[in-house]
Length: 373
Ligand code: OGA
Ligand code: ZN
Ligand code: ZN
Image (tube, rainbow, N blue to C red):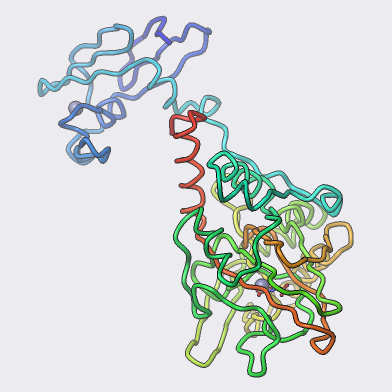
C-alpha cells in the first residue's frame, strides 16, 4: 500500500489512494495519533494528552514517503505508514464494516448450529468455530459433553473466567423443595433473558443437561433480535416506545434485593439492535407515566406476541450430554412445564460476560492470522 499523493488544506490534508479513492485526515488527528515512543508506551497505551494539542495545530512540513512524515511547530516528528492510515481512515464509507448478526426464525430448527465437545475442548480451531457460531447466530449447541457435574465450568472456561451472580458461579437448575427462582420449579418458563434485574445482565449463558428423564420440559428458543427487527417493520410506534421507555425489573431473594431499569429493546448510536431485556417473571409494577400506560402495555403485547409466535420460536429437547450456549441478551430461552414425578431433570449453568467472549474471539483470530486486531 502506497499513497498516490496528498493535497493540503487549512485544517486537514487529503490523501489520494492508488485505487482512486481519497481520505481526509485532520492535522489535530494526525498529531494526536502519533505512534512514536514518546506519544505511545510500548504496552500500547497512549502517553500523549489530547489536551496538549491545539485543535488548530498545523504541521510545518509534510513529506510523502512510502507513507507520510509530518513535522510539528515544537519540532516533534510523526511518521505514518500508508497501510496504517488506510486501515484507520474515518471516511464513513471506508470504516471497517461492523459485524452483523444472522437473524433467524423457526426454520433454524432444521439445522441448529452445533459443535462437538471434543472440538471445543481440544483445538483452538474448534473453539473459534464455536465462538463464531455463537457470535453470528447467538446460539450454539455443544454435543457429546460428559455428564459429570461442573463440566459446564470447564467448557465455558475455554472462553474466559466466569461471571458470578447471586445464584453463584455455577447454578443447578432442577425442581427444588425451597426454590429461590421459578427456574428451580417444574413450571413452564416463557422465553426470557436471565437477570434483566441487574445493571449489567450477563452476556452469554451456558446450560448443560446432566439428567433428563422427566416428561415435558422441552426447551424454547427465540431470536429476539429477529422479533425486534420485525416489530420495527410492523409496529414502528411500539418499537419506538420499547427502545425509549425504561422498564423496571426486580428480584427479591433470601439475600438479594436487585432492581434495574432499562428499555426492553436497546439500540446503539447507529440504530442497530444490541440488547434485549425481557422476563415476564421479573417485571416490577410498570411505572410508565399515566398517559403512556396503555400504550406501554400495548407495545409489550406487540413484542411479546412476536416472541411467542410459532413463526419465530424453536422447540427442541435437550438430552443428557447436550450443552446449550447462547447470547443471553439476544436469544431468549424458556422451557415447557415438566412432571418432576416422572423422572429427574437436572441442568447446570453459568455465565460469561460479552467483553471477555469478544476478546477471546479477537485473540484467537490474531493467533490464527485471521486478523491483525
Ligand atoms: C434458567 C432457565 C431453562 C430450563 O435456569 O434460567 O431458564 O430449561 N432454565 O430449565
Ligand atoms: Zn510522537
Ligand atoms: Zn433462564
